[in-house]
Length: 195
Image 1 (cartoon, one colour):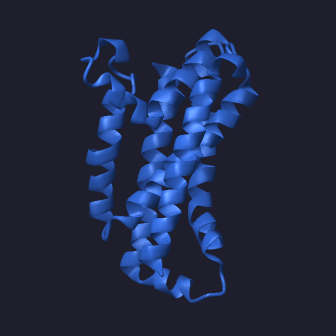
Image 2 (cartoon, rainbow, N blue to C red; image 1 turned 30 degrees about the vertical axis):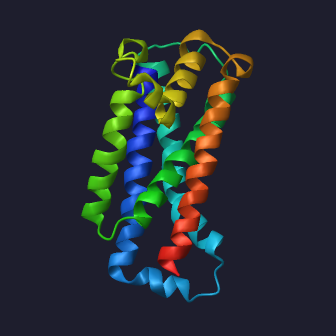
């Protein structure tokens, strides 16, 4: 359960905070002010998402330290691989937060959208609470659309089994693909909604 908490915390914190932070800028009207500055679109997006990414990295370090030192769960695999895959997962959760901000007009709408349409289904369909093989056969294919599913397999594999890239590459590739797609979609949508 503890290794899965790393994945859940990153999802909840970075997705919620990044979506609401950008929508707050829209509500206050400061996003339009930023749009008229000589900043490139990618610089603006990186500048908005970077603080939440740093917060996510700090969360990974803290939860991993608590898991190892407080709960005495041995980190059987590579800490470097755990960190690298966490960065890929952060790209995914921040991209999801940016996407939610492009389809929301208020902070409350962003929070409700994130919670009810993204975070809750991901929690139940990822294998974090219920094993995927115990789910109805009609629902199991839907779990492949959930990035949390891949990261939970990665974190548990690194933490508990000590496996490396040779075993985890399908999950890493799927997570990376999901992250690139959602980030690209979010950037394209942000150009349309913020321009």
